[in-house]
Length: 114
Length: 118
Image 1 (cartoon, chains in turn brown, yellow):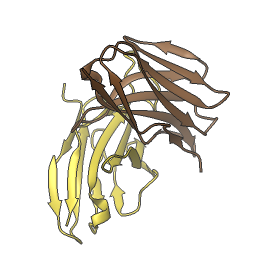
Image 2: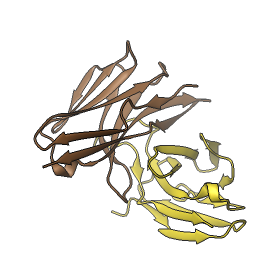
Image 3: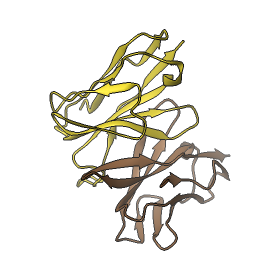
């Protein structure tokens, strides 16, 4: 079936390095994608989003890249900090029965080491 | 700002018991959602609502029921609790289904409800 998934379940990086978290999706009709950060014991927090008519979008220290050809989404975090340690989810906006809904991928744990 | 408020925060249920997870939002959002998150896993959509009086099934609706009598409230009902329903439950709301508002925030999540069925 169609799904949103992640290539790597865990990612360990050194403080100060750049992090790249990947996500594959299979529903070519999805028009909107979001990255969320979830810290332990908390709900997901919005990081950045991108519409399907864009290839790249930048925020503060974060960049999302969308490659529709291969149905791939990535989140790049510059100068990773200990506070970036969390689980990161990609999500896609799917249309079904006339309504849209947000479907999440499995998540990638980012561990930042000093 | 209260945002999305869920209660209770923690609950232990016995198999076969029923309970309702409450969710309310004060942002006048049309869309509301219930997700469950199993340990080490992503969020799975249980039910969602596009407005008062309208609800629809998500990915994993079995064992749950919802209602949406007002814009603000979207309770999730477990009729016969099973161990497989042990999970963390998140309520969420948005203006539009996944579309960004001016602030860039889309779906607002509650803090979560930890449910254990024994």
